[in-house]
Length: 280
Image 1 (cartoon, rainbow, N blue to C red):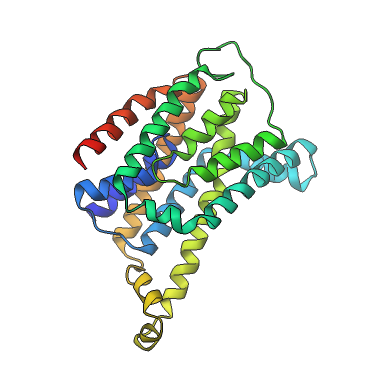
Image 2: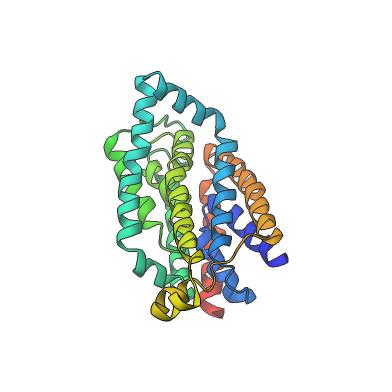
């Protein structure tokens, strides 16, 4: 139960704060000796964090859905940008799946990626709508900015590169309004987080039909199904903690972004990255 709560807390907080949830989970397991939780646990964590997005941005999501139903040009354009940004993310995430997965087994590479994220967050204050330019109102999203942001989100599949940190920083450099950048970053994460959860669900469903006879015929697939896992109260606890922590992280981060304090997280990441390189 304690392991589930720890992993749920890490996932919920780090998924949305610009500190990389994947990187923190890799380092957490390495330093604390936490065993792999299993495929089904990953699904539960994704579900918890995805649900927190729907709760915090429920008004905006309903606004977009209703607007699309009534063919409102503004909301149709907004939905189009989210879809457009999701395309390069999917191409990178699926196309480079194996190389990216191998990085999860390299804690030192994760530490280097955390340092990259820290540097990106720190220099974002000099972006066109960064904290050094408090008077800047910012420009509106358009098709090429959505594509660039989608590419950045795809690159953030690297453990240690923060998805929210890199996408919001990227939009700040492109001159997008800070508040809008925060909202768009998390709205565009719905297809990304939901897609990751769906892939895990598909793998888990396939593993449910694994029998001893089939394992002999396909030992490689059988190895992947060893940690498939199943429902338990511990997993529900992890999901609940991820959901609550996710809501807290979303509200807190949006406050930091709007006040121009986004780069404050860079100091924490520099400390974690450097200490990780020294002691791991």
